[in-house]
Image 1 (tube, rainbow, N blue to C red):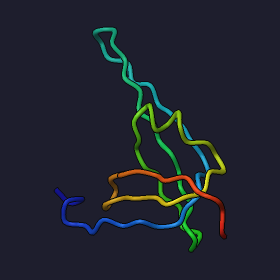
Image 2: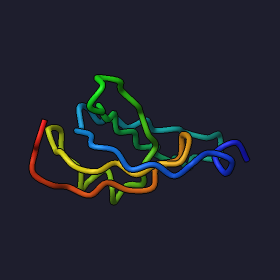
Image 3: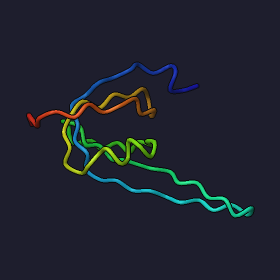
Amino acid sequence: HHNNQQPRLSVEAKVVSKRSMCHHSRNSTSTTQYFVTFEVESGDRMEMTVNGWEYGELAEGDFGKLKFQGTRYLGFERQQANY
């Protein structure tokens, strides 16, 4: 609900790190969560949860437009670095 109240933003950012966490449950199933850390022009960093496909498509060092709403990741459009 909190994210729905936030504005949708698009900012210049670069991918600075990626990580994944595997969760195992008692019934022998597992799920993996994927996280990507972005650094914006101000130097601030934000870690966003992404799906497995996005995780695979993004590489450390990529530059582009990060789109998000609160803490919700909306997308990343890769482009040439200009900062």
